Length: 219
Image (cartoon, rainbow, N blue to C red; front, side, top):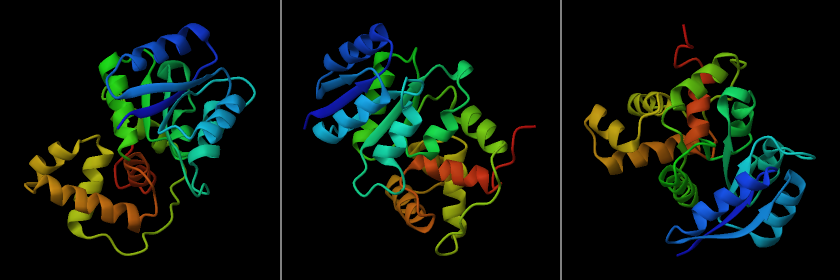
């Protein structure tokens, strides 16, 4: 099945480059481009792409608000969003992830990583650039309010172990290896965590863990 992608970035050169990189990948088709958040929201609602790739900083409506409008907790039929930005110059990535984004990449991401992030989002999974995963979540969550909604049911010991591993940026395969359990068991625990913590993505699981102080903040 072809993954239909909408790309939004206010810089034409960047937007065109991202679209070209994705369009040449097997199984991916860029169905629309937008130069600002308002246009991106309108296009996404009309075209219903499988994945939206949004820059965080855009005029009129930024990528965070566009993400919240299309993938926020109150959206009945959310569209997968991957955020892309320059981390060292943007302090709003954490807000974007809380708004419902399924992934986060730097603008210098390789075509392979960009493709992986789009494919992961289309599968209902999440991918954050490996070189900033822990740094991003820990740094922003360390400054976030500690209050978080309680789980609908108590977490089991194993679910807590899996949650901590996710918060440290581990992949499913790495979690299975570290905890000496099967990959399918890891996926079962993650599915249970999503229900108990009332979140939609792996990224939001990691955020919940950091905000709840299950993972010590940096320093």
